[in-house]
Length: 92
Image 1 (spheres, rainbow, N blue to C red):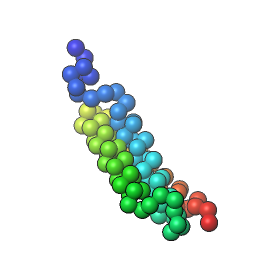
Image 2: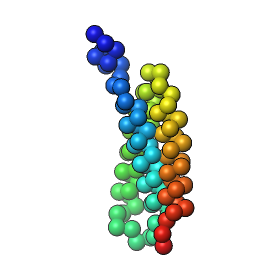
Image 3: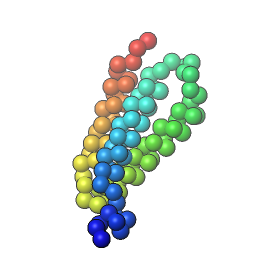
C-alpha cells in the first residue's frame, strides 16, 4: 500500500489549495475595487470568498505538513498579488 492509499494526502491537493487562494484573493480585490451597486450582494460575496480562502488555506497547510512547501508560498504570495492586480487594474 502506498502513502496515498492510507489517507495521508493526495498528490497535487496543495496546488488546488494554492489555486483557491489565488482566486479568492482576486475576488476580494475585485470586490474592494467595485462600485457600490455590484450585481452580487456583499454578504454572499464575502461568504463565498471566505469559504474559498479557508478551504484553500486548509489544503495548502495539509500539503505543507506532508512535506510540500511550494503550494503554501505560491498560494499566499499569489493571493496578495492577485488582490493587488484586481484593485489596481479595476475599470471605472
